[in-house]
Amino acid sequence: MSLRIEHITVRYGQTTAVDDVSLDIADGEVVALLGPSGCGKSTLLRTVAGLEKADDGEVRWDGDDLTGTPVHERGFGLVFQDGQLFPHRDVAGNVAFGLRMAKVDKEVRLKRIDELLELVGLDGYQHRKVTQLSGGEQQRVALARALAPQPRLLLLDEPLSALDRALREQLAVDLARLLREAGATALVVTHDHDEAFTLADRVAIMRKGKIRQVGPPAEVWREPADVETAKFLGCNKFVPGSFVGLANDRVGLRASALRVDPAGTLEGVVLERVHRRDHVRLLVEIDGDEYEAVGPVTEIGDRVRLVVEQDGLAVLRDEPHGGQ
Ligand SMILES: Nc1ncnc2c1ncn2[C@@H]1O[C@H](COP(=O)(O)OP(=O)(O)OP(=O)(O)O)[C@@H](O)[C@H]1O
Image (cartoon, rainbow, N blue to C red; front, side):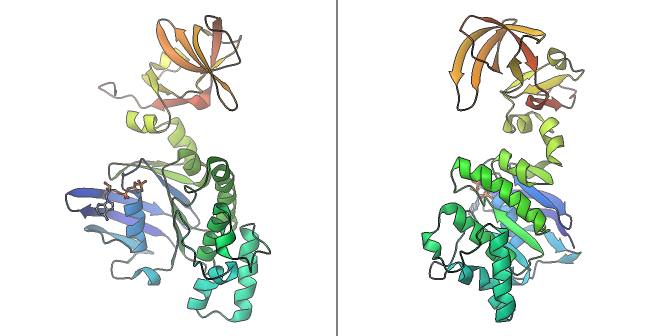
């Protein structure tokens, strides 16, 4: 039971939206397709769904080429950014949709609806109108509806991006849990790295129509394949490894890489201070160069010591020409 994307290319006129992409998804695995706007993520997902036709390459399930298989016969569940619920049906009516199509008995159907609503945290919502639900609740219903017929693969296109930040963070955690509980095999498209890293067993980084790197979240976070990927994953400064005590040629620093701490070995002078929701962000001069750092509160002009936070670092593989 596995999906294989083989050398898929999709063009729109002069634009190559997806450029020779190959990717496998194993049974029960959640893979996130992560990349900036316009990199081709949705086009690739839509091609897997059968909503878009590939100019080249194949999408296979258990070895079978799906090229001639229409969307509704692929056995895949789809969830889009805005849920696309049926407004005239209640919650149960929406969740039941795929089960009705599959001619599942009413009794079994009702039981399955109850199970799914419990799974997505909407127990007791069966007869609520979907137009009277919050955005987060609507997305949960969309997810329950997609999961109901037990699809062999779940395709999620920016499932949380219509929601506000706080709700998105909470729902990403819930979604990760319920994909695991449902044992779902899923491909999730997102441009938000926090979301991708929360949800996925593996993250595939996409840029300009190509997959640049695939790996477990911790590995991609720690060792981006190149400088562009490191920048996309939050690195805004690149230094020789020796600056942070590593042997690598080049290391990317995220804003959280340096933290003021009297035990630190680096020394600098505070140039600027900004208060953020849950921390203080500083601009510090070290040996004539400027770096971001995380506070405690200090005064402009203070001399401070700084420690290096490993999570804030990205190690770049040594490149013969020195990368950026
Ligand atoms: N129907 C279409 N006709 C023409 N060009 C298209 C069409 N759909 C997408 N494109 C182009 O293909 C490229 C990839 O688009 P796609 O929507 O797959 O990117 P994306 O990574 O999903 O972006 P976003 O995160 O903004 O949705 C873009 O340059 C886009 O303008």
